[in-house]
Image (cartoon, rainbow, N blue to C red; front, side, top):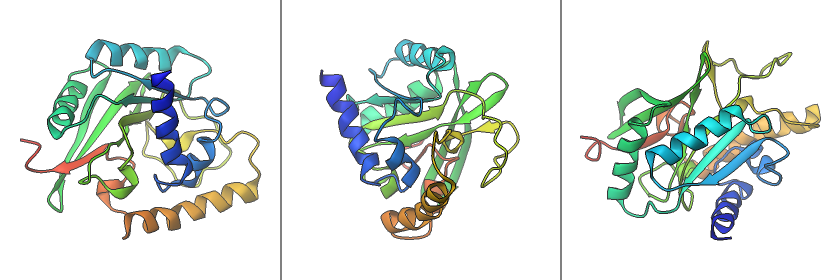
Length: 211
């Protein structure tokens, strides 16, 4: 029951448009329909690895969130980043300095593809679109569907959250959410998006934290 309250609290962040992306707001209304599984976990390497394996194998899951309500302090968060780096399915591909921050890009190996991991947390140094109630990582766990067209090409071999299939959505609705997401993201952040909030960046942390 407690885990379900954690999940519902986090979903409400998405439903209200807090992540900027209006597709996330839409999907958060019925995550099961869209293959989005939200799991609550301890900051434990074996438990994280198990959830990732399940997300890859389970046919009904295309997107996996792992929420860590036990992460309260910055020290908790720093420890989590190190554990994530040491977890077998993850690797740290990006480590770029940008405007006083280190933009960390964690990845998950999904077959021959690399899945970008998006991160959220309750820390004010994160971009506004990443400031959820609980620390969370989200990634796509299945190959990209064979779409007839895409709005924006991803780098070769990369899959990410935008690859989610929008079941039954009309073209007009899709276009509305696509273009509306740009406006909403800029509104939430308060400026044009940059590397700190980019899809390729999991967490942007102060340089003093990453030493």
